[in-house]
Length: 177
Image (cartoon, rainbow, N blue to C red; front, side, top):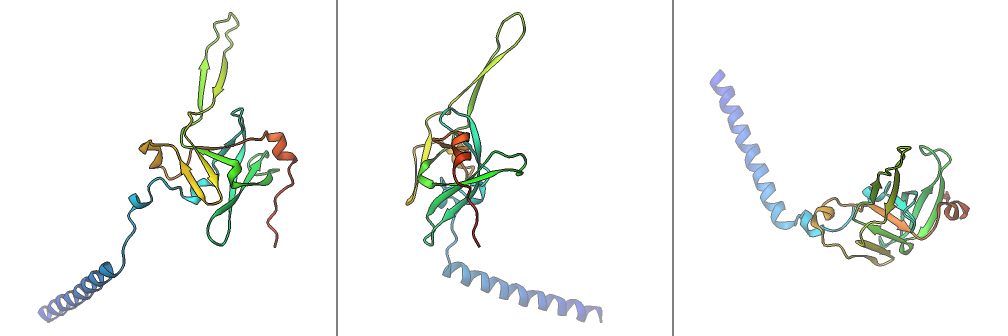
């Protein structure tokens, strides 16, 4: 009795393995899989949400809250959350995608200790290196050639030519029903 059960189990396993192998070989020849290297240098939209936005004075003015795309998939606008604390009281504004510049390089800050008798220190923040990508309605073009930052699938930060106060005075963006 035990031999019949083992034999039936082996026969069934062989049938399933053969069917699975045949299905795998036919699907792999009819469809092509996209290799990650095919899309190297592109960014994941899910990773753009939350990216910090700085102005020309290297001051944090908010973060990306959403991306607005047209029916062809081109990014037309960026919704930026300005102000607020932990999402409370945040002012949402929408700006054209071409007004936002992206940088793969981290924001660099330089801290110099002040040797005064009071023991205070001063810090100055310098803008990042000039590796930027400018958003445009038709796509993006990057001037960076560093492979280590390209493998992250998202930029380090975004930049916009506006102060936090200017963004707060813009009409608030709302998602209409």
